[in-house]
Length: 132
Image (cartoon, rainbow, N blue to C red; front, side):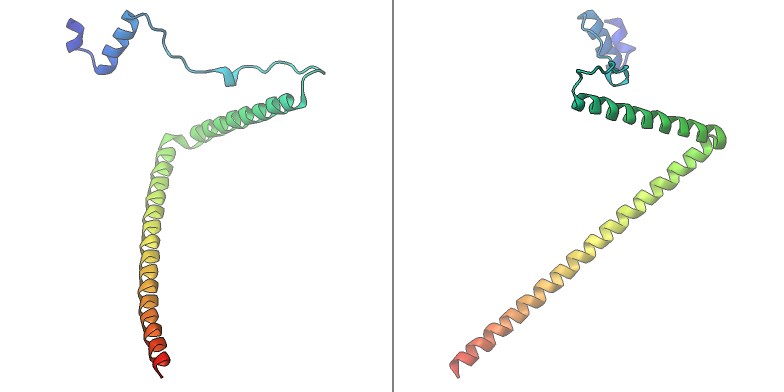
C-alpha cells in the first residue's frame, strides 16, 4: 500500500475501517434529544427522571453560555492565565498533601516506637513486681 508510508497509524486504521465496511462509531446524542411529552398515564418516576434530565441539560447549557460570555468579555488570554493559576494551585495542594502524609507517617512511627519502648518497660516492671 503506497499510502501506508504517508499516513499515521490513525489514518491507516481509518482506511482499514472503510475497506472492511465497518460503520463509524458516532457520538451518542440521545441525551440532547427532546423528551417525549408526558401524558396522564405516564408514571411519576418517569416524569421525575425527565425533569431531572432537563434540569441537568439546562445547567450544562447555562454553564456553557456563562463560559462564552466570560471568554468574550475577558479574552482567551485570561482563561489561559486562570488555567495556569489553577494548575499551580493543584500542584501546591498535592505537595501539601504529600507533606502532611509524611508527617502522619512520622508521627505514627514515633508513636509506635514509644509504645513499644513503654510496653517493654511495663513488661519488665511486671516481671520484677511478680518476683517480689
